[in-house]
Image (cartoon, rainbow, N blue to C red; front, side, top):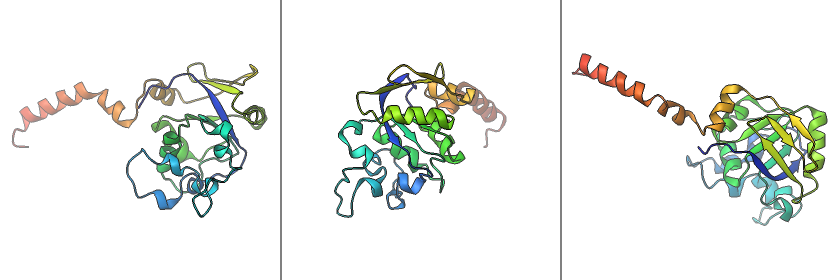
Length: 201
């Protein structure tokens, strides 16, 4: 996983509440175990009609938001079934941060494990950020994980809280495998000791 850098990018406004994981990535696309390739089907039922044509008024189909890296969303984002494909699809599309008043617990934790920063903000702050995102591609928002701030295009800065361990993992690009590999020397020592004590094992 890449180290999480300070992000300045386009923020897309998605004021819908209760965006569930089936809306993020419909179940028909869950056959793969690869993390790549799902971005094209992100929000599939909202992005495309039944003939596979783009729905012009869906936010991520609008020219100014096609390269969005931040989502400003309604309450309870990522609810529903506990599918890790949801953050996979968001990350593959290019989303690196999501701002909402609340997230479903499993989605929230899965996001960190896949290099996405979910940020919880009070409703009044989300309202400000939503209005800023509605300005389009010229309104670049900045997410600074190190200093735990979100800054609007006109310079308004808002602090956010994040678990210190999750922050450490994102800043250092550590997923579950990366965390295990940090202990590689201890694992090697243990395996060598075990081999000496139980050569038959």
